[in-house]
Amino acid sequence: MNALFRRTGALLALILAGPAAAADAARCHYIYGGETKTLAVAPAGMPYLAPTLAIGSYFRLRIVLESEPAELAALKTYVYADRDGGPVLVHQGEWPWPAEGGDGRRHGFTGMQRVYEPVRDGELEYWCEAAGAAGAGAPR
Image (tube, rainbow, N blue to C red):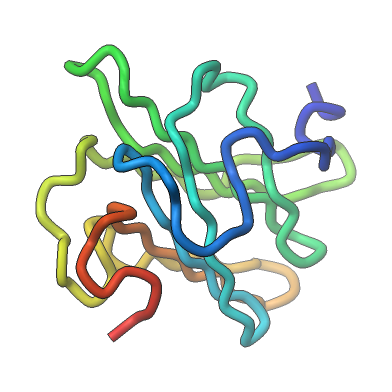
């Protein structure tokens, strides 16, 4: 399983990009080490196989957008500590999909989420919005 988390291949669910093409997509922003990046997140056909993204030398971020079945649809986030013995879950979030509210809010429908490194004193911040949200892509 550790190899799955370390795979940096084609990032099936996370695509570094600007605008997302599909209406049923989310855009997530993360800030680490003073740098802000944006991820376009499309619905995952196989959520358990969604890869993780290495952020710095400590964090791994996994964002899964499940749009089916409709009654269970959600955007789910997982932040792992990348430890020598394998990844360890340190933060998890889940929000109903399609996003309920959040359009036009400063930090989308998830609000600003913060995760801290206990050893290196670093911080990962992230927030997500619907890809079609007004003013999407930049914190206000």
